[in-house]
Image (tube, rainbow, N blue to C red; front, side):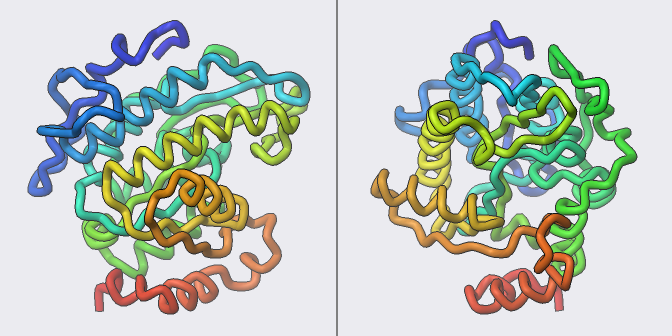
Length: 288
């Protein structure tokens, strides 16, 4: 999707039947009302996609200065695969939302799926679709989509853990969904990945205020009862946003699986398993 399109221009991409028996990645055209209007006759996936489309429209109005040089939005150029993920796995009745902060350069930036390490996305989730390109690409951070050969360690750890635990994705997604608070990836002139906390304060807060609103809309629309932030930043932001909006939901956190996190490198799966057992989540996801 190009940056000059409005929500109404792109909304035909976001339909979905949400059927559990045969979750497809193709959808029929259908219209949407604003996320604040009654949700009668909308599937869970269409409600979620509408929130994201409205967030996209607002994000296009933001500007960012140095150190940001490039901005990628996979909800635009990777909308096809992202829509496939949402239509296939945002089924309704899920009570737990795992929340990341924003895309990684070799995960969601390539696949359109949160923590979207390619092999997990293609081989386990069976996500299909075309991935395009941002309008302006850093030569060191090219988008190759589902053909990307670079491994996203965080995503491989995250989805690898749940694949081992659940066996099939249907068990995981019966109870859980995974989402990023912010859909944008920020890249410096050097090619360095910049996380939202590294942005200038004013720009960061303008960005996250919009993302906070979208998060609250999604949680309320889909009825999640627990939000688990993946990493302290996502956990703290979710706690602050949902509390300020008066959304009645439990907010917890687990260790981020990033290889830049020394604790994660010492055994992220064991730490995550212990925390999820403490929260009562582990027993729901075991295929034993």
